[in-house]
Image (cartoon, rainbow, N blue to C red; front, side, top):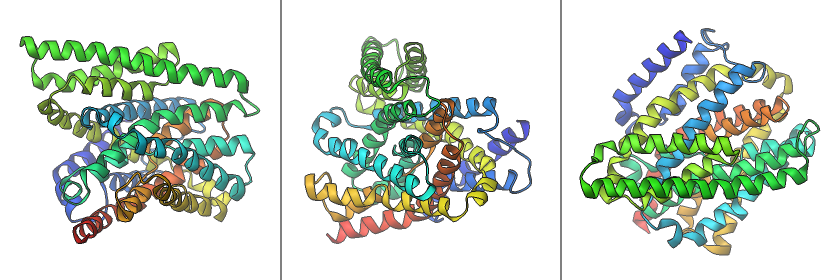
Length: 406
C-alpha cells in the first residue's frame, strides 16, 4: 500500500504540474497516463503493486467503496455545474438519451457479450448493465478545459454533463434487476422490482430533502453573513458524504440521491458560487479519480484475457463502437436532441465507459456475478480510456472547426 501511495502521489503531482500541456499538446489524457503507470507497476510490469478484486473480497470492497465515493463526488459536481433550471428546460432531449438511449446501450452491450462469449442471459444482462452508464469522470475531461470551452458548444457540454450525472444513478436499478435473475441471487425478480422502486423513489426523496435543507441554510448563511464563499467546497463534500451515508442506511440508490441533492442545492447558489465549485471538482479529479486508473492498470486480468482469447477482444471493441453511436444517430432523426449532425456524432462517440462501470462491476460481483463480469468490464474500460484519451483533443478541435464552418 505504501508503494501505491508513493506512486499515486508522484504521478498526480507530475500531472498537476503539466496538465495544461497534456490537454493542449499531447494526444492523450491524464487517465490514460495513469492507466499505463498502473500497468507498468503491476504484475504485467515491475510487479510492485498487486490488486485483485475477483479473488480478494477485501480488495473488491476497497474498489467498490473507492469508486462509489468518486462517482458520488463527480455527479455532485456535475449537478452544481449546470445552470439553474437546466433539467426542466431540456427535459425532452434528456428523456431521449436517458430513456431509449440508455436502454439501447444496455441491450447492445448485453447482446454483444451474450453472442461473443456465450454467457447465460442473466449474466449477459448484468455485464451489459455495468457497461451502460456514461462515466462523469471521463466525460468531464472532454467537456472542460480551454480547448473544450473554445470548440464544444456550451449546450452540448451541458447535455453530456447532465446525462452522465443522471444515468450513473439510473444504472443501479439495471444492475439490481439483472442480478436478481442469477442462479445465485438472494432476491426473486418480484422482490427486485420492489427494491428498485424503493431505491429510485427513496433516492429522489432523500436527495431532495437533504439538498433542500442544505440549500436553505446555505442561502441564509450568505444573506446573514455567517458563511463564506470559500466554504462551498466543504459544504459540497460533506453533503455528498451525508447523502451517501443516509441512503446506505435506507438501502436506496446513493448515486442518484447525490445528484438530486446537488441539483436542489444548485438552486440556492449564485453564479459566483457555481464558479467557485470548480476548485472542488479539480480536487476530486486529482485526489480520487486518477488513483483509480493506476489501480485499474495494476489489476488488469491479462491472464484471463489470454485464456478467453479473441472473443473477449472483439466483444470489447464492438461495445466501444456500437454501444452508443448508431443509436444516437437514430435518436437525432426521431427527436433531434442535438442541433446538428456533427454534434450528434460527437455526443454519440464521447459517452465513455469508466469509473462507473468499475463500481457496478464490483457491486455485481458482490451480488453473485461470475468473474467474467470483471474480466469484460476491465477490458472495455481500459480500451475506452485509451480510445477516448487519444481521440479527445483532435475530435474536439475538429468539432470546433466544423461548427465554425457551419
